[in-house]
Length: 199
Image 1 (cartoon, rainbow, N blue to C red):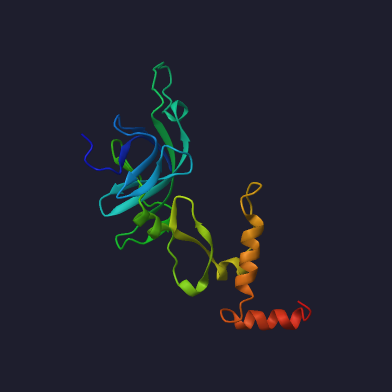
Image 2 (spheres, helix red, strand yellow):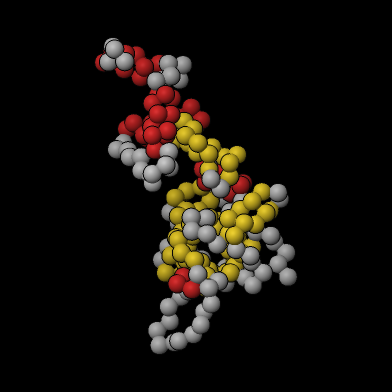
């Protein structure tokens, strides 16, 4: 019945950037494989895609199960546990470039798909490679590097947060190592040497 292996459900409730998705009866939660790649389905933190004409909306799953079902006042009905609550985070333009925020919203019965590696590359892909430093890879797609924009990092307030063992110290050490590489950032390294000659 389900011809598209990426299809997982349909939009059944829209409340601003929060939407609720009912999974199809054929959708198996957990790990699914599409074209040889594994994707998380029905897990908090996984991405979904909602095609709207020439634009794709992207969202992150924030809640799963019966608690994610729409609330209907005065109606006691068993909704079951095949629901996802999704926070819309951005959209792709007609050129395929990802932009944060959404300019339009889905409607009832719009189809919802898992986000494939090609979508993740559009979302996380760098602008100018020279401005980015790799700090690891995406948990959902190991072939895609997790990149930090150095220009934005050093010109804005920044924080590295995470649970114990998540790799905060490793990321900070990697960033410092990258920033002090004279072949990439010669002027920064010269300024550091003048400011901290014993470094």
